[in-house]
Length: 198
Image (cartoon, rainbow, N blue to C red; front, side):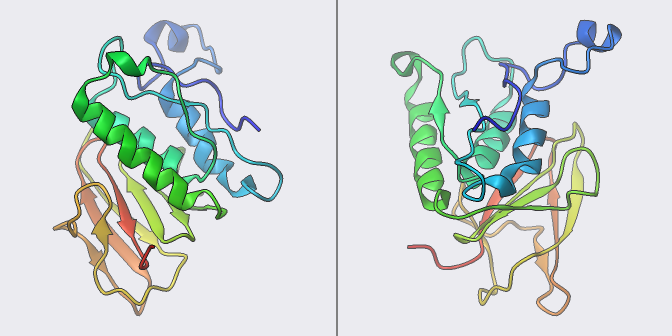
């Protein structure tokens, strides 16, 4: 079941749509907000469809960071992953990135994700998939420290980012309180491995 509005090859709402007070202006940002907020319906009511993933560089106004943020949310949501791009026109680097996205999506598909920080603002800062992944993002245009209360108990002392294979330098996690803090650049995102994943 489709759980969001259409994505677009740009992040935010176009100014003309804002000026005309069009609440339904299509953009990737609004689609991802819907994906996170409705993600817990996955495998409870239906199989989630978060709309198409865009990884192309041409005819796409999104930055690399925005594209990774989009991919992180769609993969962790565990739903169907549809690619709308003509794969023959995508460069080698983006094809490798797409392969990693599909691998992450396959690891997350059998679990129902849990939105984290849903009441903290318009764009929830995190999504946890019980397969062992916690996506955290900064959907703003400025660097920000994201602080969340985790919804899981982990035996791991360090959390590796799926995309880089390294523990983020600014990551702070208290096992006692379950509070996790992470400084992220504008539109930055990480997918932390919170458990040993096979």
